Length: 122
Image (cartoon, rainbow, N blue to C red; front, side, top):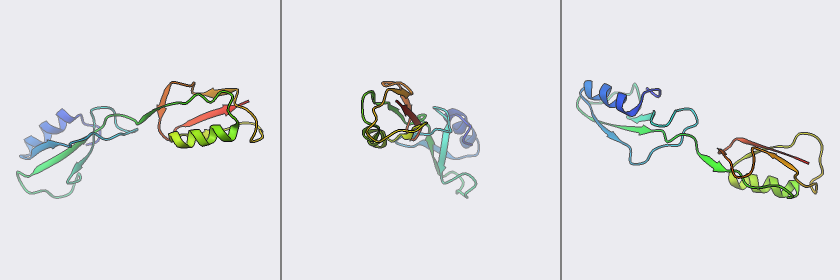
């Protein structure tokens, strides 16, 4: 069901004689497109009484976070900042903790999914 849009889920569930309620808040999802169903309550394939209400949770897409500007920061400072923003860090090549960031990818100010990787180098 996770590949269904909310409107397709409503049609399917109402056709099976359930009442449909959209969850009060949408869910972040990096695997389900915006507007797609992420889960239901009760869960898919769990029994539900005839005519009962099914709560449908809908994706608002991935949790995007603005990438901070790391240029000129020491590598250890950059890594701490990226940790605070929820990013993973990649540092190809050798460096010393006091080396300064000269390049980063993705670029500062762009949005990237939380838990994705930001690469920093001299």
